[in-house]
Length: 511
Image (cartoon, rainbow, N blue to C red; front, side, top):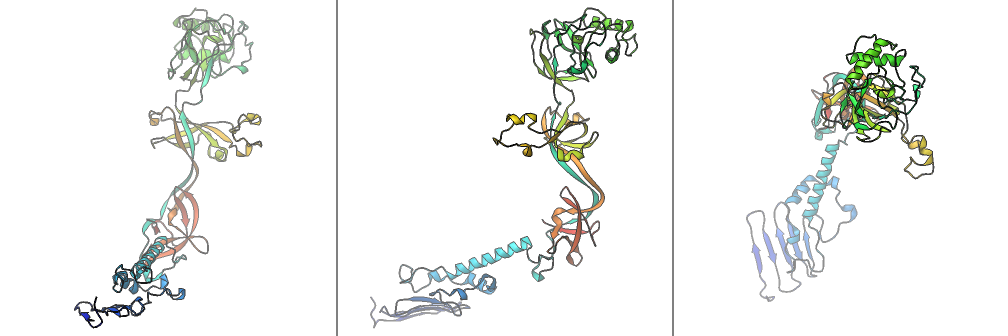
């Protein structure tokens, strides 16, 4: 251990940025000082009391916490101080400490350099946030030399036709299926008179059987011997099903056969039968509403081609009537079953789009309205409104008994029900639908259209403090904010007008 008499001074001079001096004595009360001379001086002293302090000229003594009133604020922090802090020596590792590196009698303090760098980072981040959000100068005025020279991106004012649209959900398919029923059992009149009320007949084309029928037309009479497969297309004259190996063909019409037709019969059903015979190639008669001997001869030829008994009369069960070609959706019986009940269900042969339209958009559709249909693969086809049904709610009239409600509430749920309007859309370009047989689609309805208007992207609008909107117009001298009056919004664009706004004007938009 060095004695007091052996005390020596060690002086180390550096020719670079400063000199380092250390003075020590053998006693605990000896003074230790460390000095570095440069643009910023750091000195470390060890006093007789054992306390070590690090000082920097003009700076706060780090041995003591500065009072709250004297702490520097971030916004007042001099940039030269931040730069100097980034290059200042780290006092946490300076001389004057005990062997364990911690000042005697005190805890380690956070280095000044680290604190100042953190403050600098916060300040820079805050400045970047302000620049990105443009919160400085919300009134549209310039912000001095620090303001950006122009908007991050630009767009031009365009003159165009702006169309407002409404997109709703739809379903692509073949439409609602109807059921083909076996002929009803009835004695019929057999005298060629109407005798029966057709108001209760099903539009599937099945009527009541009568006397003189050349096919097994009564319920329970005959055995089903053939049915078509699902998806099969059936056209006029094609077989719908077979009973006892006798063909039951399809005829086109708006109502079913409901009585036996023979010489002397008159009516619209006679005209419908004669139209079908003429379309199938049979001649020798006049298409009118009178069933005469010429008609009967044509019927016998038709029956011969069907391998039936040539009676010259047509009963209700001898044919099925529909308003056009049909596609089999579901077969409900099988060969060997008795002829009764449901035989099959079918739809139209062309794919259509069905929409349950919210009634608030009812004014956007009428028969003949053109719409755009987007398919799952993002391709589009044009369609036309061909049928509009009657508005209905999701619960219907049976909601009172609770069968239609899933909410569990005791009160009425009518306020939550959405009234919808069934709308049918016809697609003429069936090839444009691709191979989709059934799919969820998007239907775009045109709500409003404005021609020859000036438009800008909605993102170009800047809210003004006093109300209203402006756009940032790029000029030869810089930018300026010009107030605009807004019109219709559509497709992320907005109609604008105002002084100094014309086609081709360049406006600022976000990047």
